[in-house]
Length: 131
Image (cartoon, rainbow, N blue to C red):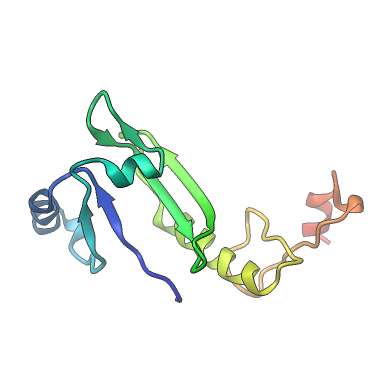
């Protein structure tokens, strides 16, 4: 799709391997799983919890120029939705080509309705999407 996925956690690489071997939800994971035992990367992204030595569940979409496009941080006990993450990823790819458009919350894929920001759109998004 035009991007790389890397997961990083404060777990060791051995913990990652154990999870991947025993957890069926991770059986098809083929992207790199990196260990951040010192918390250096977690601190850079503002998700390191010094009290526990663990990282919160952060998800970041960064473009090739190094610009942060999306960030989402969840507490330890809240999983992430890969469908929503992929929607955001695809929307950012689309908006990189169509900078004058915005992808509303129900946008799923290229071809779905987008909006062009303007003063007349304020307070009328619902109407614009359903026209």
